Length: 404
Image (cartoon, rainbow, N blue to C red; front, side, top):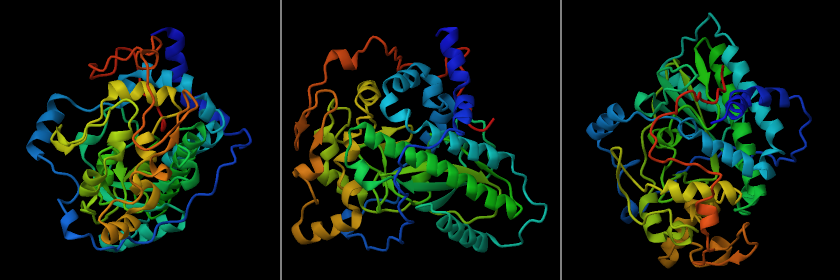
């Protein structure tokens, strides 16, 4: 990698910090209100297991032998390729992202009060949930910090408890996937998530506890913590599916030493819903989504083919067809359960409303089960030097720093 490219990477966050002073002309829609509690009983025939099936011994072994690293630190070429092809949605959202980064850094410098709250773990958890709702987070979950899922490149302080902060992104813009407008909605979600996670960290510090907010896409495997804290389950599309909004939410993390009660994984019946649906498998333009789950790093999951997925994500406005065609994303789990109870079918399957989309690379509309032909000029673009066998950051490449 050239010296110029290394310098651009080193100063990315500094540039973002300067951009926060520019006027915001993004026209971002308001953030949806916090979610009501999901209290629907899951039919017994949909139940499998809480969260994901795991082999703790295998998880530990793999973590020792092949520690996880932040993806774009291992593959800096991929991040630069995505930025180069993402100007349509990045330029108009840079100012908002810069303000989110600034709030994260400000919260990091904020000193905890010397007067620590005497609240018990149960009381503190209740107080924190009320504050999260007040500042506009869709929902929070709480899990123990697990070093196996934290990247060694992290520049955020690692404290015992992880607070998982969800921010729902705009519904209407999400239905425009794949498009720059839909990708803007994801960027809006990240900027609002950083701002609100920073606010929650400062709240904990005013209560006398330490707290460390993280930037996006996080200093850890955020989806792991989403599952561990009972916020959702893994879909076949590899994403965290929440019962309220499917994958239509951004995940931000903060760690804290405040006494908190941990949430537990939940079985929302989403594994069986995915197995009956498989719209993402049928509609993926490059066939990157497997039909079945298999063990990977000690967790039974659907492991996407990154070699085929990433080039298309970078060049087709984020692609995300697997998100667009997911009925949990569009309708929510409660509506799906109602429809299934009445008809025995998954809501939206086979309809153009759910499975139809306009493909940005050729301008054509594709209906249910139709997929565009993605040629070698996309999948093997010579500007993307992508060595998927690489497991660690290449020499001389540092991570993107959000905190320091």
